[in-house]
Amino acid sequence: MEKLVINGRTPLKGEVTISGAKNAAVAILPAALLVDGICTIDNLPNISDVKIYLDILTDLGAKVTWNNEHEITLDTRNINSYNSPVEKTSKFRASYYLIGSLLGRFGHAQVGMPGGCKLGARPIDQHIKGFEALGAKVDVSQGKITATAEDLVGTSVYLDVVSVGATINVMLAAVLAEGTTVIDNVAKEPHVVDVANFLNTMGADIRGAGTDVIKVNGVKKLEGNATYSIVPDQIEAGTFMLAAVASRGNILIKNCITKHLEPIMAKVVEMGGEIDEIDGDNVRVWCNKRPKKINIKTLPYPGFPTDLQPQMGVVLSIAEGTSIINESIWESRFQYTEELNKMGAKISAQGKTAVIDGVPDLYGAPVYASDLRAGAALIIAGVCANGVTEVYNLEHIDRGYENIEQKFRNLGANIERVEE
Ligand code: EPZ
Image 1 (spheres, rainbow, N blue to C red):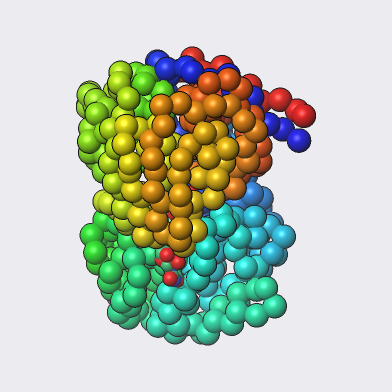
Image 2 (cartoon, helix red, strand yellow):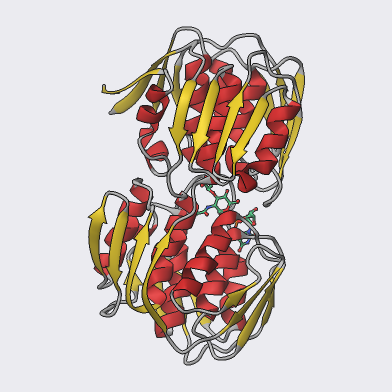
């Protein structure tokens, strides 16, 4: 079993280059199934969720050619199966996007139930609502989701909750539908916009992504024959911004989109951290004193992202004073606090609220990542703590961060991946 061994008390200094966004990549790869042709996708993050997806696409009949470490050419002219087994789909959440794209192109999809981070209930009722509104029949039984449709016809869909997954999935199913689909109360996350931009580059006609209403004018076919570069990862950039504050370091974050980071920059400044927005793609974050307590409520974009809540929990665990985190998206996203309390933090979490009494120091301990972002948070805690921290369950972290220990090591962290 692999673990990360971290010798702490290191102010992180230097620069880090942000990779392509995980939550865009795992939506754009299945979206490419809507293309009846060839496309090139660049700035793909080198993470296990991408590897699994390319595996699944190959099973379905797609031809994948790697042009370099971060760029592929995808040929989806000869897709010959609409069925993806649960062994593969259960490894991550975004496998549910296969339904929207296979249904959209072939009128038929059978996909094993999606897996992913254990954050409490993760229903897909809004996805199904959208597919059925477009005219599909959806059956969820025996661990599979089967969706079929003679014809998909454009219509209006109002999403009852702001859902990233449902917004993207209904958009996928509507791209080749007859007529216009209007999806209301949609998610506005950068990765939602990135999927729409990818599809438009391939020949779709999608308008309004990034606003509350998305309009999809159905087209006959996506020709492809184009190249698309995936957006930099807002959450990876935010992870290093919070690592700079927690470690009282100074980090230049390169190849990010600073507009997407505004909700995080605001909180960094509130805590006493400092920001120098160099230009639209690079930002410097530093902090040379103990952060101040603040309160956080996670919200859909452009609110404070839930996928940075655990990393923020680490910063607040060593802040001056008592902070409160309100997790409004997920029922149970505080598992990491038990691990931090093993390191000397004083956090009491109940349901969707955590009260954090800041302590001056954390101390190294063996800790276990319960999911992807909890894992990133424990690495930050290890870098700040006195002594040695061992982080286990790295498979969670590798799902969404490319070369994470190398990036921390380049910033001066004493971190090593070892086989136990
Ligand atoms: C996406 O998950 C992300 N995953 C998650 O990131 C992220 O936490 C989440 O959006 C919120 O930003 C991917 O993009 C692959 P939702 P998703 O549908 O699509 C409720 C990470 O760490 N809901 O926006 O599953 C749901 O219960 C991961 O990278 C319904 O009720 O999230 C939740 O409370 C973890 N019915 C809320 O909406 C539905 O049909 C938001 O969920 C769908 C969702």
